[in-house]
Length: 244
Image (cartoon, rainbow, N blue to C red):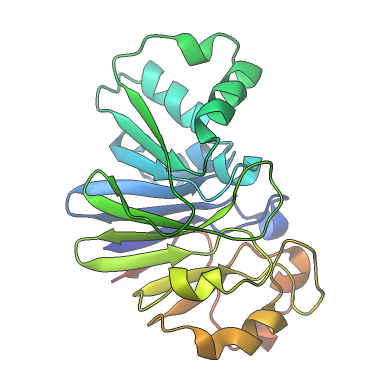
């Protein structure tokens, strides 16, 4: 498995970073974990072919995590894509995706394309679901977004990757990260509590509870980026690639 942080930023482009988009590949498949609004541009800027993305697993239904899906779908439509695109995410994703497409490109949710877009809603209790060659699991976390938010775990080619999504501290993170090869976790601020988000000092107090083999920080505000030298845990950056 190869994990590439195509976008490691927050909703506001802090530090000039792209919004959340994590490219996971292995076993001849490429999938995205989250697809923020800037993801299509970020993929192309880094030389990654969007049409090679076979699936997208979404943590929650905020624009900086799933708002790039309409652009990914329309790009496939106009570039001659024929392979199906599978999308899996929290309960409510099917309706929210259709609404987003109609808001951004009226009529686009009903267009007949040469490829199918297959949308599945994940369970929130860790129940495994197939996503092409990968297996994905979701655990409900704590982040207000109009639908249950998830921490996700992806298994592919005998390796595992987990991502916290956006959330304040919850024990569900330890379950999602259990014995994973890589766990990417939000550190939105350094030590200032922000509701529905995780600050580094709170995370640091719980690091001993994680059994992940490797942990990296992501989804950082400008304030957190300014304090990276004070953090003991390494941080992701746009374009960072990890071979597992």
